[in-house]
Amino acid sequence: MKTVTLYTDGACSGNPGPGGWGAILSYNGHELELSGGEENTTNNRMELTAVIRGLQRLKEPCIVELYSDSKYVIDALEKGWAWGWKKKGWIKSDKKPALNPDLWEELLQLTMRHQLRYHWVKGHAENPKNNRCDELAVHESQKYRRGGS
Image 1 (spheres, helix red, strand yellow):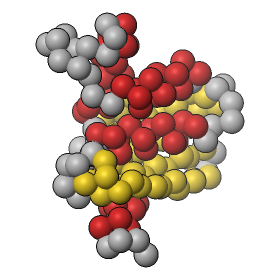
Image 2 (cartoon, rainbow, N blue to C red):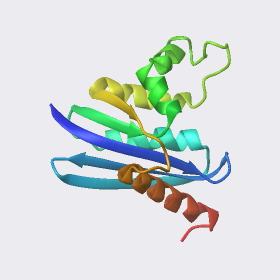
Image 3 (cartoon, helix red, strand yellow):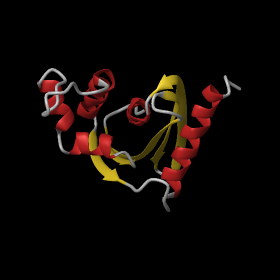
């Protein structure tokens, strides 16, 4: 299996509010930047969407080194929380509904196709690829704040 690197980030102006996501896929010296946004969303939805869109671009099962500054995404995947929420009908251990079950459902399906390795990185720090994903995400969110451009 090929090993690819996926950096992701999400941004939201207001929570909820206009949001954007950015992702960078790297393989064998080649990079692909992806980004998008929504008019009314949350930061966590954008974080999840970035990972989903990155994984969807892979044409075959891969080993994916996933880098994100979202503890929400990394912990829920790495610690298996999202699978537990799904098993309990999208209810968390505190008996509250798990948020974003539609996106988690999509992401869990993708994680079964690929072999993921999770890496949390500090946001807004000295990681150029994480910072670039943030730039992409913020740029996308600003399109909706200005009413499009």
